[in-house]
Image (cartoon, rainbow, N blue to C red; front, side, top):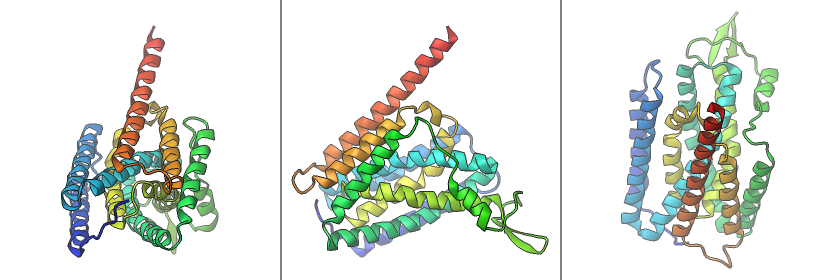
Length: 310
């Protein structure tokens, strides 16, 4: 893959753009207002537009090969992030978190994910630079994950065991206390369900990152491309959650798409020494797989709805 020497100003630009985007998102969604699905869709498309714009900047500044790597990594992370949404639904449902508070939990969860993803990426690139065999380890992780997902029942997302573990070891109250993550009850400081939800989501993201970061390494090994593509995939996750919250069950073939994408990334990593797959081909493969999965899912859902109405 093409190596990239990123000037300090490019990292500074990414940091400023990230802060501006977070500030805009926080100001636009302050208070207890709950986004409608239509408004959330508009925000989701806006974040995708910002991501495409940044990808175009990367392409113009560093060349088409790096640009293709960026879009391939972004597509991978965006696709794999959808799987997180299933867990969000389960966690919020299990803890009876109302929708206005869900948004706050997701905001802090995304901020935490931006930090942990950065640590994973810096650690992963350092390991790859020192030990080439790490490439095969990453590829094996992806293939094992693909097999694990393929063996799971369709639409199955169990209650996270993290919640039960937290209930045993963390002093808590089952009641919400406004927007607080920690509340003082009877002279004791107790964790509220909001803190449980935040911890569960953060730990889940760490587990998801173990899959998604190696997948991104299948298309690029550059720190700037890896982190910036992750940043823009995460920025729109909250809006995407609102858009898909009640329609995730319609994506009945999503698991098939995830298995194919993870399998492709795993094989690509393991075979990289012998077979070079251009980034543009990776972009095409991911786009075609996910596009086919979404079309097949929606078509199947429509057909089932017509069958029930007869």
